[in-house]
Length: 131
Image (cartoon, rainbow, N blue to C red; front, side):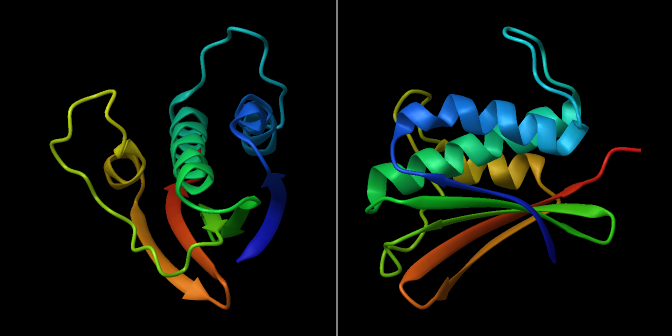
C-alpha cells in the first residue's frame, strides 16, 4: 500500500476537518460547506469518521487515520491504542446507540478487517477508486 495522506486526531472536534480533508484527498477538490458528497468519497468519509469516532471513544488518543492506495483501491486504516479491545460488529443495534462503524464499513467497503501491530490496533477498509 502506498500512503497518500495521514491525519492524527486527538479529539472528536477534529472529525469535521478529517471529513473535508479526506474528501479533498479522494477527489482532488475541496468540499464546500454543506455540499453533498459523491458516492465513493461519501462512503470513504463516512466510514473514516465512524471508525475514528470509535477509536477516540474506546481508546486513548491519538488516533491515526491513513488513506492509501493499493492497485485500483483506496485503503482506509484507522488505528487506536487499545490493542486488547476486539472490534465489535453490532448488527441490529438501534440507530443512536453506537456501534455503526463496522456495520457501515461492511456495507460500503469491498473488504474490511483488523490487526494488531505493536501497541496499536488497526481497523481497515478497502474501497474502489472511482472511474
